[in-house]
Image 1 (cartoon, rainbow, N blue to C red):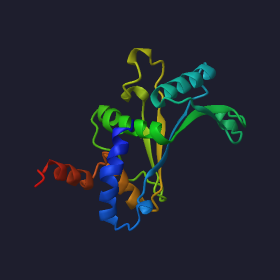
Image 2 (image 1 turned 180 degrees about the vertical axis):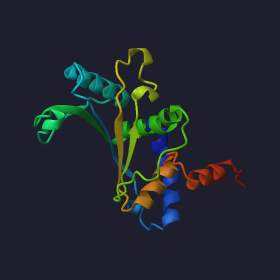
Image 3 (image 1 turned 30 degrees about the vertical axis):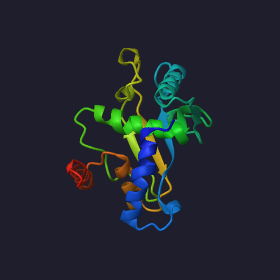
Length: 196
């Protein structure tokens, strides 16, 4: 059983991108390669070990996959940080889990942000990858609000096979990413028009 957004990519997004960018081969069409969800915890609080465990549990609940610990690469005395100290957690999603997460993020989580006006178009890295910052985990319906001990912010990096930011933006716009610009409004207007 495939995910709705995965079916939409195969049936609607690929032909739309081929028409828009003039790809001759289906393998040239950009696709989402993986999604990396990454968080870091404040180790200067009273119970740093518990904070890290809470972050890992929240990440596992949101993504449906066990996170890996991230460690510091070097010691920084001003931050009371030692080399190889556990400072956060990350999850790399591929395949079905990746599409499930993207669908929940785009269709459920982002619209739950208060006063949401769309995501920034300036968060591309120059190589066709997009990073989105999420201020706290409560926007995901899997999280029970009364059980939240501390707010955990995290980054969601969507890695695509696109060669340029423009191609990646086209891909994410077609997948339904609510960018705060004219392209999103134009797409919404096109969907409202009745087909002849």
